[in-house]
Length: 403
Image 1 (cartoon, helix red, strand yellow):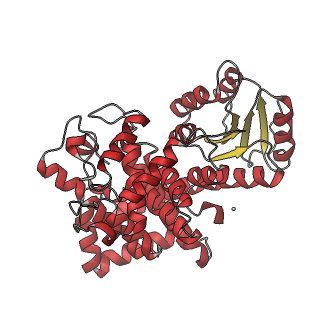
Image 2 (cartoon, one colour):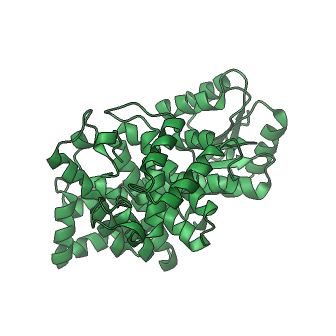
């Protein structure tokens, strides 16, 4: 174990049972960080329980206490520590499980200096940015009032120059150290923290946005969409539930089907989410995708009752990813369905809820999960949208899915 020297540097714990990768990582990171090493899961936990650590890199395939169990324990005991997974493989199912733990990045062995340095920098920036954005949200709460419904806040912001000015002051305060070109990215980081805060209101939802972004990104890649289209879909996937900030916790976590009034409150989140991101300089397709991700192919969705090709392609992609993750995750009112049962339901709903052609492609993607997931795609999904630029009426109550 290296001696701690400079207390201003981030502390990184490397966990790997193989000496070669462990020493390589130590050599790469030692010049710029305080580095600790552990060869087993129990040794890693002993260190974590005695020494403050910012970031852990770990191998998934370790004897005894494996990487997945270590991550589960860390998330319970040390939720603020960033995690970078280092492995030689990844399937759609194993990738979604890793994302469920909120990992910061995912590297493939053999790794190189550039990959490791970039991943660690992103994770440290993400951790620092999260602290800054918590402060931003505090300022935002002070500006608009903590007990107000978001829809009322947005209306006031539209009509009140005073409130609008206070909100802008809060944004400027959060961004005062940034160049102008970096401010949209920082605002995106703020929105992601807000989205994760919403997920924290319901423990069953934690990690939903990241897994949805993973599935949506993989489908967009399969459809050969342009780089810009894939990026817009990925950002929209991270932020698609941001409109639920105004939904009471007791509604989100209700262990039974919602009544009509509660369902109306939840259904408003698509339009509210679009209104939240529109003034912040997000690309136009992002707000449109968020607004339309609960439209249905048969025209029975919301908020606008669009049908067929009237629904933007990006929203149709996002809807499939969103519903699939909802079906395969535990919720307060039901247990998760198996991947096989979720695939059957997607097939059954093709042509009614889902675009039939996209549903066919998505099912083909899911059924090929024995193949490797592109590691760069997985890294994008877990690192967050655009972070690399910085150092259900579908929720069909009768079907048991609430997204």
